[in-house]
Figure (cartoon, rainbow, N blue to C red):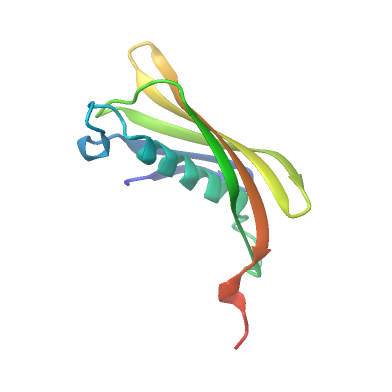
Length: 126
């Protein structure tokens, strides 16, 4: 996807990517699945602590996404993920996807992710 990591701390992530022609739908606008995938990358980075011990991973338990404006080829997209609440093994995150436009930044999508921390299956001892 060509994602650039701008900032990555637990609960606070910013990523960027340039919207390309192959990411468009038949109407010449950003395909919703591409915007979803881009927001989901920010979500995954925000809810997995890079300083964790690897015994657990945090995965999506559900998401809601609202598309606000169309995205167009060549525009720089930014996704900002923020931890809203963490209670036990469950978390709530807001991810805002924006695009550069002639008048500054405009909101492309609002993504709300619910997370769950689970044992890391790759960390099982054999």
